[in-house]
Image 1: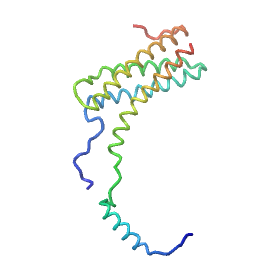
Image 2: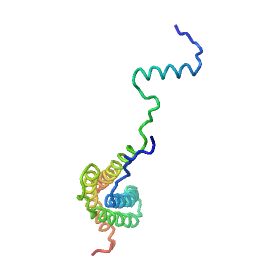
Image 3: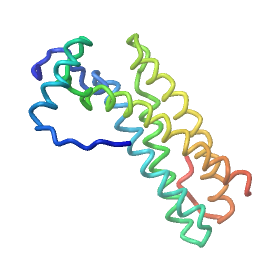
Image 4: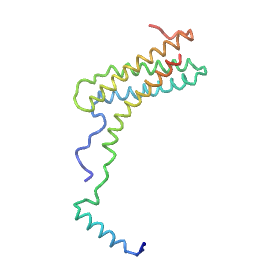
Length: 109
Length: 64
């Protein structure tokens, strides 16, 4: 029958949904930044701005606690966490490279 | 050699049902709905997207 009660919706937990939300936004920002960066035809200021926004989303996504549950979805969330950590580090490096190369001020703390 | 005969569709259906019954199959069995595969697909998709970013960032770093 179609009215089965064993339907399991998406991430199933607000924390995991939050993590995924930040992943999604980070991916969109950094993808756009990479596209501009890869074309290598100026517009670096825009790439820098997009990297910064993507980095912020990665930070928010990494800050989400994904160790409070057990099971496949949490395992996957923890792997996603690790991957976002890697990309945060690499995106920061890239941002610094672009910013220093262009002698731009990028709101250093 | 091939013999083409015209068999009424109803007979074909009956025959299929008969064979299925003998084999213990459920002919009207629905294909797995999109629910399960979508959930799995979505979860691995996010991982792949992060992997893609990693690869592209790594390539840019090598090009420096």
